[in-house]
Every structure is written in structure tokens, then in C-alpha cells.
Image 1: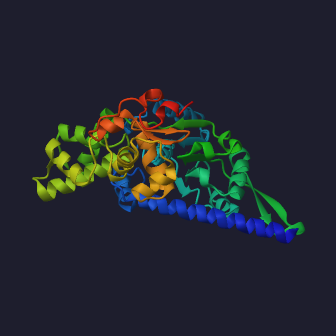
Image 2: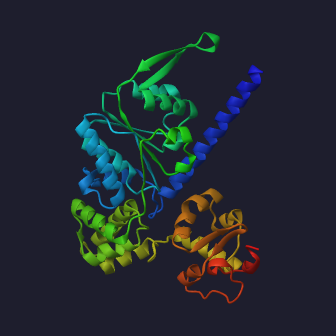
Image 3: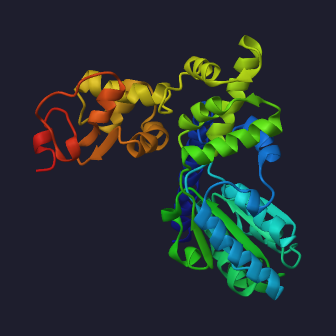
Length: 379
């Protein structure tokens, strides 16, 4: 029985390691795209200089800012750490920045780690046992915490205590270890994967939404000032319209357009320079890049708009299925260019128009979806 349990545990660990390796590989591939919301090494260096330090300087997310301001100010007045904070939303919207602002507003030091980095409960215990009172702990991608560490975190968040297990087998004993009161800030791009017991222990939960173009313009102008870029208002508007509602993408596009302006222009970023640079990097007016357009063209030119299965679509564009599903589809669905149906992916009339094509007459399904068999797709 023990041997079988050990084999099952080993198989589970191997499967988890493979999943993490695949996720890391897909993240690295996505980070190479100029419109990727994931951060590469250059982004992390630049973002450190561009991050606002105070809540009043943070642009966008007005409701989150107002709510968080009340939580932090009341905690400061009481002289106690605030409730644990959970930040959810797509990558690149400022969750890490908000976490750093929380520590700055409280005037407390901050420990930064991530879910994949905490593989064992001992790793988490090493972090928590050395905290000072009121310190802020930031765990990025908290939904990827290992189960033993996750269970230890339950007790730490509620009672500020961890149980350190000494020994193995029947002789093992749990030694309770009190830790200093702290504030946990968790960030996740997939809040649905968080277990309910963990999610319920956060006293304040905020969801980060995509930014409006006007908000991105303010962010781009601020970043241009910090980077010493001469930016015209029409150039900022052009960049904001192609940034997919994500500040990280906006700042990356600004750096790429700055490079173009310095090499092939006079160093000034206006509308014409921005358009020429983004055309060179294959980012169109709606923020679509090569992969996005390849998905739409495969759907429309090869299959008349769909429906097409995910695996078939991935083969057509030369990518893995998970890359198409996680990297390309969310933005295409949000822009109304792609729909997921029970029988597969379908291009919307807006996708046809974006490629300069006319949607076929007839075969129209709910919501104006077009393609062979659409009339019976939802029957």
C-alpha cells in the first residue's frame, strides 16, 4: 500500500513538473511578441523605473483605487496591518505595482515571491518566520502555489502561526511557531483556480480591468517624460489605440517607436512615426499582431469563417493549441473578432471586415456569426 502511494505521489509530481515546464515555455514564447502582456527581462528593468510610487499617482482602475485607499487609510489610523489583499486580472494591468504601492503607503518593507517558486511548505515557512510586524508579503501567481504550502498559508493568514513538522512517519511532530502579523498581497491571472478556503481568507478582493485609450495616453505621456522621449499628443493617441488596453504593452510599444524615431527619424514621436514603426513591427490599428491575424486568416480563408476545432486551428498557424487558446484567443474574443462555440472557433463579421473581406450571405447564426453550418450550429 505504501509503495503504491509513493508511486502515485511521484507520478503526480512529475505531471505537475511537466505542466509547469510547458507553462514556462509558452510564457517565454509569448513574451517575445511585441504585444504580449507578459513581462520579459527588459520589461522588468524598465518597469521598475516607470512604476508610480503612490496610489494618487496610479492611473486608471478608479474603483480599485478608491476602495483600496479606504482600506489602507483605516489600517494606518488603527495602527494595525490591513486585511489581506487579493488582486486578480489579466497580466500587465498593474497588480505588482499596486502591491508595491500598498507597502509604500503603509511605510512597511515588502517581500516578493511567486507561487511557482514556493515548491514546499518549508520554503514558505522560511519566508514567514523571518517577517517583522506589519511587513507586506507579495505572492505573484498565487494560484500556482504547491498544495502543502497552500495549506500552511491558511493558518498563517488567519492565526499568524505556522506548524513546522519535525521528523517523518509516526514519530513526526508539529511544532507551532508564532509569526509577526503581516499583510499578504496575492496576485493571480486565473482567480477561478484559487481554492475557496484560500480565496475566503482575503479580506479585500479587487479585479483589475483593461484600460481605456484615454487612460493609456496619460500613462504613455508619463512614461515618455521619464524616458526622455519627445512625444506628440497624436503619437500618444496612436500608441494608446494599439496597446490592447494594457499599460505594459503601451510602454513596450513606446520604447520600440522611440527606437524607430531615433534611428530613422529626428527623435520625435508623432502620428506618422508611430504608424510607420508599428507597421514595421506588424501591429495593426486594433493592436493585432502576426499571430492574431494568422488565426483569423486561417479561419476565414481556409474554412470560410468556421467553425474550426482548436487543434486544427493551431496546426494551421504553426503553434501549439495552448498558445492559440491562451495567447491569441482572449484578445480576439474581447474585440469581437472571434467566438467560441460548441463546435469550434468561428470568425465574426467584424473579423471579415478587419481583413478587408465581405462576410458571406446566409448561414448566419446567433449574434451575426457567419460560416458554413452556422444556421444549425446552436440547434
